[in-house]
Image (tube, rainbow, N blue to C red; front, side):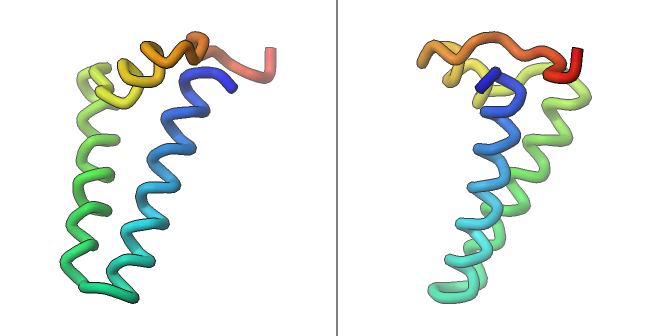
Length: 68
């Protein structure tokens, strides 16, 4: 798994977890979904992604197109 896919998978899991927590625990957990969405927008504009930095430290190899 490359860095791009790891970040996308992490964002997807976080959204699904927040929706489940909002349904079963409290609607306030939807703020996590908002945070993830804003972080994705910020990363697309600035190129700075905290999740990518963390994944890189764990040894996930750099991103790239899987369809070369």
